[in-house]
Length: 195
Image 1: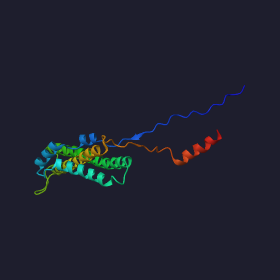
Image 2: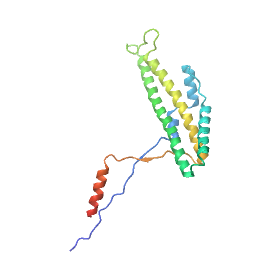
Image 3: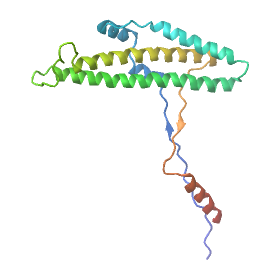
Image 4: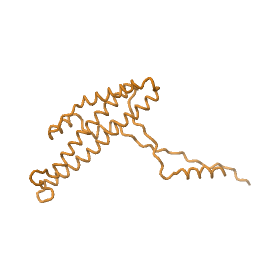
């Protein structure tokens, strides 16, 4: 009896996506306006014009879109602004993550400095700050920077919604499969010719 010919089963291909940063992720990691004001007052740094940064970046993206309107179609404009806004949001989210790490290090150093039995965490020589103080000041600087970038991203996201007419979402790109090389794919295609 002859065997029925069966074609080899092909498993469905699962494509993993690399998730882009969202504006919500940036909001969670970056200080808001009230926290940025509190940081600026506590550390004696300049008070940031949060609304001004946001409004400026919103106008910048809208004016850029207006200037490109004659040269780009609707889909091209959407793709272009998707990338531009994604860069702003990604930058803010990265700064927010860096700020969070700086705060953690500052808290750890401050807690260690509170322990009187530790010599290495005592105040520095006269005229120099302690390591814990330097870490706190660094975290404050990173907080103000993260907040500024968050406001720029907020403005860019608002402009995208105004120009395109829909809410901005990050582009999720497929993850490269490190085990699947081009030569392996070519070999599979060639061997399938013998089926």
